[in-house]
Amino acid sequence: MSKMSPKTYNRRLAAVKAADAVNKIEGVPVSSFARLLSAQWARGEISGDEMKAALLAAHKPAASEAKP
Image (cartoon, rainbow, N blue to C red; front, side, top):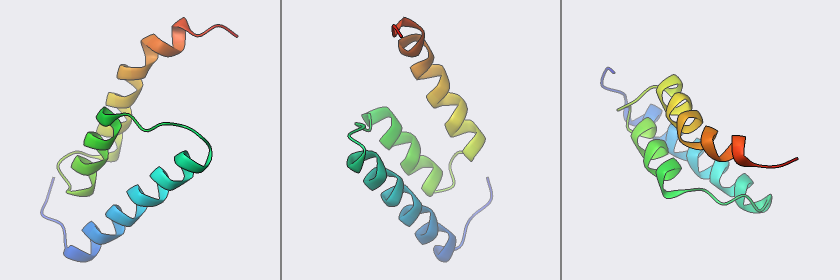
């Protein structure tokens, strides 16, 4: 990814903090892997699509084991 401006980084960091806060309010734990991916996205090291794909791949086995 291309170098991002400090303004973009700060906006992404704020978005990550807001998402983490919403998850906490809802009682949904944020895994260390998700935190790592969020930090990489905030720094512009991975795209949003790459982050989403990695999270889906990591959590798909657990979701398929869950019983309704």
